[in-house]
Image (cartoon, rainbow, N blue to C red):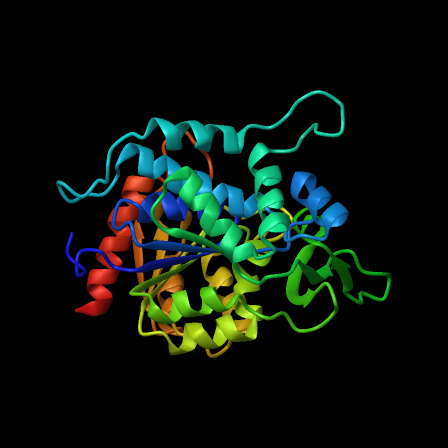
Length: 337
């Protein structure tokens, strides 16, 4: 594959949204870097974070799973560039990575990949080296990096949980923010030490060197916006010459974005990073009741809006990887023409 046909892509996010983005991107290139949020404080990841003081591994594990699945299936579009085809070794390890222990003992609910990553973090003493080693174990191309090298805490101002005087309330923690019955207004990000978070240097370099940078889809306040609240990453997004694309969610998320229109998602991005300029906004046709409003909101960020049927049939809230890949290809072409 030529370098021109192998664009360097960076996807910023976490959880299932990042999984969808990586699966779609792998149809376009194998030069992919996932930059993953590290604020999860629930489930297996939360337990590892609290007990060992490590960055939460769950979203990092999910990114590996997406890349390993795509690697196994050989999803690049160009003939002869699909890699080595199904790899029994890589497929087996990808399956083991995602396996969760059952029962009711100390291991119940832990994913094997979470424990393996935690072990690599402790043995190697360097999260980036540990994640690169995991990539070699899974035999995947591409790279998975943490947004920051230490665990982060999300704090959110939430309406609807106020006292009688209507004063908004602040809540702390990703699980609390994601599950709040109120409506999130804005968030802030702090390191465990209470200081402004410092970006992973390799993640900053990946953004600066990229040809394509994707933000979203995913939990808007807990997976997407946090990247804009890390000063070095935010600066890199402003400096990079990459084509920058925002991919919108298919449906609002209860708690975080309940009642949000597609254009409101963009408004929130602007409120948290007023200087952010992007080249394209991708949304599903059926998820945009008023296309002209979305086009105006996109234009205010310097972007063109691309509406296309990108939802997976029979799976509510899930993107179709092939359709999303096609929209990404077209959006990048238009932005560069």
